[in-house]
Image 1: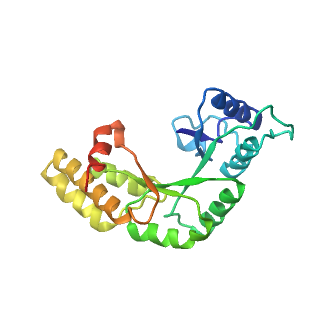
Image 2: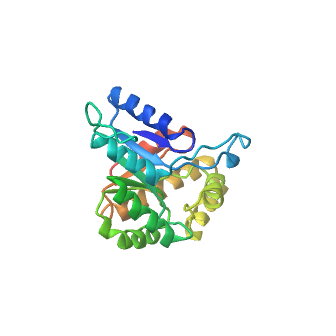
Length: 221
């Protein structure tokens, strides 16, 4: 699944990328607006935001109907599956839900959430967007260490970690790094077990490229 950000191309460039992806037989897209460069490794870079994720979802939906951004008919419509991101733990949840509704109206066909650490936050969000009726995949993040937990809590919007989970990671870290890793996997498995009846799927993201953690989380509960 290609994660495509709106930050780095103008609209013509994005349409070119999309048609090129389709020519390469890539069909699944996760469309995200993207963070401003100033918070990344290249703060002096210039951002390009011709459209945000709502606008690009509309562009892809139009391509799927056989019409390009200039209103001209394509020789053959594209057949992308349009995914978007959503943040159940957003500080301004009303605004986040409003944007989510607009993404669905623009043509989004599924959504992937930010990492879920508080099941109650996800449950509240799902109740409020039940009318949107598209599949939602919950983000699952097995914590690697106490430092990883603190980073997620303090630096990743919408990924606040409840105090109880933070304390579990702190106690595990006191024993040692391997114990912390095991506790992170155990917490992720518990969250997965709690939400599996609420969502239509999950995206398990391995921290620091540690893919074996994702496999451990997905072992039978």
